[in-house]
Image (cartoon, rainbow, N blue to C red):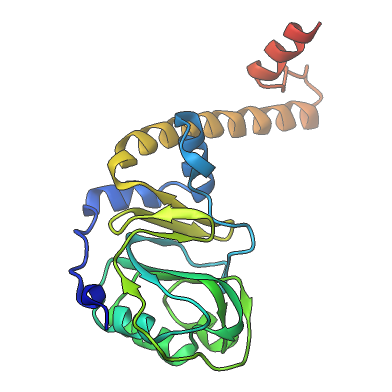
Length: 235
């Protein structure tokens, strides 16, 4: 067994940060990172999808590095997990075996993990989707996992195209999973909250336009200012 199998969990992200994040979407957080030039904008691969679209996932990353359907290190990470952590499994996109099923998912939910992200396949789709815990995977395969070990726990990994360091912020909803480097959380949140303000104003403008049209009043300009500016620049 690798010496780092029992590495300590990273420090949890403060609850006041978690509450701010819950008011935003992964898409808004991606936009915030894009404005700061962060690589890939923190977006994991598009084929990494939730088993249940209705669950929001927010938590502190703890990581597993494994391959070829070996779920031994995933077991170890789950049983040493604690509430508030999202288990990020760098499974190399392996498709020939499932990395986990509903028994492991049930154990993770009982422990109180905030979510599981698996760069690979799972099984027991309906059982996993019915659990309280949000789970993301790339697909489904009924063949059972392998158990070899050792794997690595709480090391820097690449999961679904994104570098993840233990302690990073992990957020997911029906659109996918976004990872924010821990050292840049505050500036990303500030940028994302600015984008949220812009979106609220745009929704108000759209609603006002619709109301004017339905009431037969003069229609205001609906195009955002940046569209008009770009058109003028191209004329």
